[in-house]
Image (cartoon, rainbow, N blue to C red; front, side, top):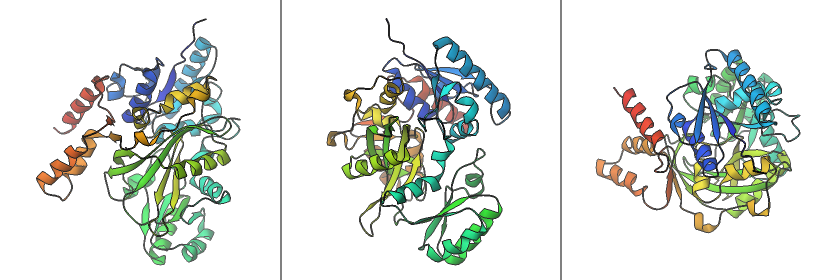
Length: 400
């Protein structure tokens, strides 16, 4: 009997994530069906992607959800089982979290293997840091502020400078739109008091967190964990360039395997009982030399394709686990030989370098130096070239 390659359903949000997943699965002949509300995004033109056009959820979320449910029903009928539904960005993840009880009837949604806890449980930063504290792993001092009663405690016990960030994002990304940042930095009790007062008044639940010195140095551990919460594939890297010094989006990631972080990560995910793909973020504290965990993303991240470029095809390994095909050969972590592989968001990185304060020729040298050695790209691929052509055409059109 011929083995069935069940398609993976993705909700649009990030071209880079969609392409990273689709190319990783496509080389294994796993099709990806992309639910999108735009007809002309780069990901739609990948040879590994079949676009399915729905109503824009920003215009009519109820209609979008009903279409998603109907599509899930039809896929269940066609394949005789539920199929995997993956988010490609936070907006898609929030849509899935807000409609979890209905969607879980017709889709496989990663997170809780028992399906009792929704995705929101794993998205909430306070839950993550509470668990890390219980297993006694290094993390910056973190205090949740859910209401006005928490303000005085946070002010008295937080070292300065500190950062304030929402415990969970909303579908409109209101925090980022209002403050143009993922977090707000406070350097005194007075500034923290005014920031917390304002945010709580506006209805945000937030975390106050000790700031680890240094603008850069965020490291990641991409992984897939099975239904028992055991990590069966992992890949580590660090941000070597990003679009802003503080709390920016990476434009270059470089692989670097650190066994200590892998051991920490296994302990965290096991205790969370998390099933699925995700990324742990951590930073080395120069004050004590310890790696400290700062966040868990429970979805594929922008630079996901670096793992496949480095020889650890986490999307495919996860796919095998989900459909019961995992064996010992699938339990993979990279060796030291993968260190130094670069994932590059090419056009974004060029813009970041050209906006820097260095001299013109220094900037050109900086950009060109990143193009040496083994590398993969966010959009560009010789094996799947059309998305990069569309990406460039769309960029040129917006510059008119």
